[in-house]
Length: 151
Image (cartoon, rainbow, N blue to C red):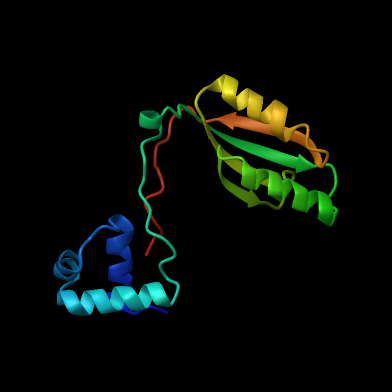
């Protein structure tokens, strides 16, 4: 487990991955070289898996966010693998989870408009032989976006 200083480093770079060693050190009261060494160790140990940019969806023409629940017709290994391969090819699917309960998968999807979402569901998801049912919920407003893990 990371110590308190490591946790503060993780929280700081989770908020802004572009912090320089000097900025990070100043924020958590370490020298820049100590901050850089600790950050490098956290990266090497797998605590930090990627540094990414959050992009405003509307600025890039993505105006519809939806959550789509998928219920499978079969749970046999090969159809499930084929469905996972399909999901991996769909750039609109930005997150995918397997679930307990009625739905087998929950997909978070971003599309340009409702017509694009409709095409994705009716032309790509529903025709898959392992899919029995698809239910979508369109996001009306997002009150809170992912800002990082609660460290």
